[in-house]
Image (tube, rainbow, N blue to C red):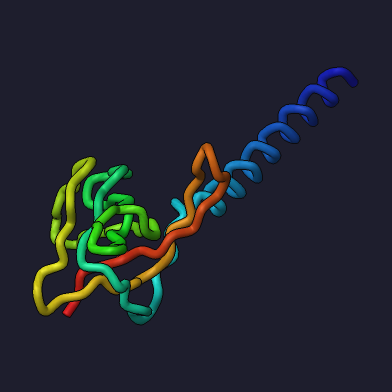
Length: 126
């Protein structure tokens, strides 16, 4: 009888482990949701990187101009580069003439000070 209880416990443990791992794999989508079509344009030409989250992806603050003074205090965006560019902290990203930053998705991440935050993913386009 004790052996049957032990075997039932082991089988239950294996089944629960498999179910839990499937649930975790399904829910860990890295927070990125890409659009089928590009969305809105971002009305800024310069951005300042404040955190690189992986090679080729960086969180940046949008430049705002007020009374002739420029500061990087605007909305946060995530730059994702398909061309293999590596970003670094405090880098100023300048949008080349004839191109604009355009939203291509959203990124949801956890910030220790604000809980979950969702920001637009942007890409430099024509």
